[in-house]
View 1 (cartoon, protein in one colour):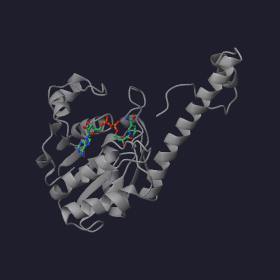
View 2: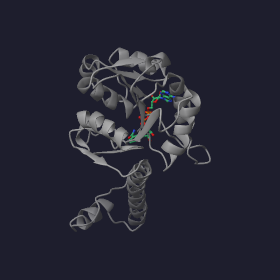
View 3: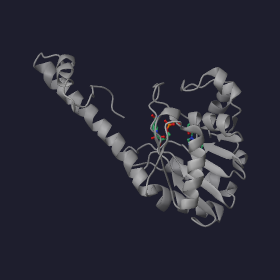
View 4: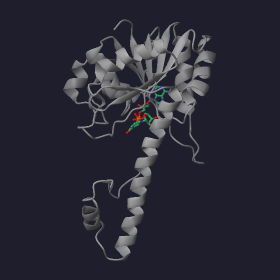
Length: 254
Ligand SMILES: NC(=O)c1ccc[n+]([C@@H]2O[C@H](COP(=O)([O-])OP(=O)(O)OC[C@H]3O[C@@H](n4cnc5c(N)ncnc54)[C@H](O)[C@@H]3O)[C@@H](O)[C@H]2O)c1
């Protein structure tokens, strides 16, 4: 693959993507605002425990907390957090800051792919204009947008970036072809091309919602069975013998 690839935000999601790209495509830089995180990664230590010392030190990934590292990248993948505010509204501040940092470094012809979990419309209606404003470039003409939701589950070493079907979506066929080449190189399980960025964003939101609602339901059920002095575990083992009973158990949501 020609040109530099940059990954913005090296946490649970960003680091595995950056390492896989460095290994399979080369020429990859990882940028994070946390100097501490960058220093630890340079020393081969990943506190999220997603990437072991040997892989981290041999993958060829360059990491930096200096935005200059983003200069002239051909493809940029944004994997910063998307928390909620105290009022439980989406907090897009990290995304805005990432766009403001990236914008001045953006070159004509760049493809910016967001992987952060967002509500439908954020990539094209909010982040695109932020990038255009910060770069002086035109969205959809001078730079392209893509979205590819991340489906990893921290600590799960079976369902990994390489082994989970990855959704890709872009604002043009040309940009989608670039994403196909990029993600095709690192995802062995195959890609699924969504008809639009909005559809891909919405799909991720309902994946999370379905999981969270089902865990929350099991939590409520466990409270009820507890009062009835019935073992929830026993009940789930019985119910789970039906072909379409979903295997959710009580636990933490989110
Ligand atoms: N962790 C998961 O299980 C998971 C799974 C799927 C999707 N996601 C989504 O992926 C996104 C990232 O989540 P995560 O778990 O990797 O978060 P994280 O907190 O583990 O990592 C985010 C990293 O981004 C860095 N960062 C913050 N603002 C930045 C900026 N402006 N510029 C550069 N770096 C910046 C932080 O220092 C941190 O290292 C979120 O939208 C999350 O919802 C997470």
